[in-house]
Length: 208
Image 1 (cartoon, rainbow, N blue to C red):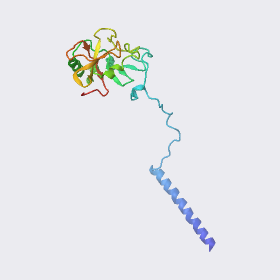
Image 2 (image 1 turned 135 degrees about the vertical axis):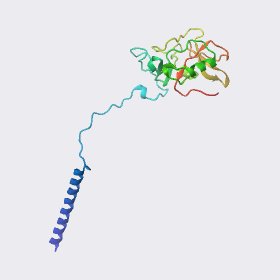
Image 3 (image 1 turned 120 degrees about the vertical axis):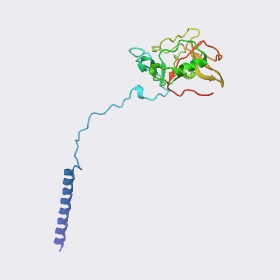
Image 4 (image 1 turned 90 degrees about the vertical axis):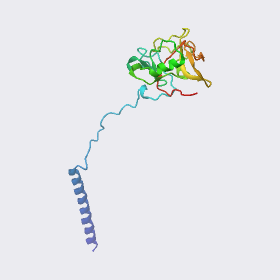
């Protein structure tokens, strides 16, 4: 009796195993189960990212004089067909050649709003803080090796409008000169001895 039960269990197990092999064979023929290559498709990809793809944090200090030319340093890169300069420290895009005309504050603002540098609109007057990011660490002029054109440091009247108001006063914006980074002034509304250096990107400023 015991032998009969054992033989019955062995017989059933054999049928189960045979059934599993039949199902696997059928799945393989139907294309459900495919054996792939055990080899990797290729070498590991690089995890390094270029500076242009890293979001600016305003915490970095990048060199502006380590490129083969002014447009290829760690900090600055000429973009938009050479009409503008990307500052990788802040992510802002500046006119490569700021406006040379002296303007009133409203006219400076209008110039940036209608500017089409690099065949692109969307320009604006920068804030005081954004202008000051372009000042050299010693406050005298722009960083060494910069690619900008027509920016004089020690020329009287070579000042640039910002969109920043002075302590809630809305009659005019404050101005910056790169002769001294600390030389931030509050001119009268009608003054027209200041230029417009337009910027693209960033948060901007709207209101008091």
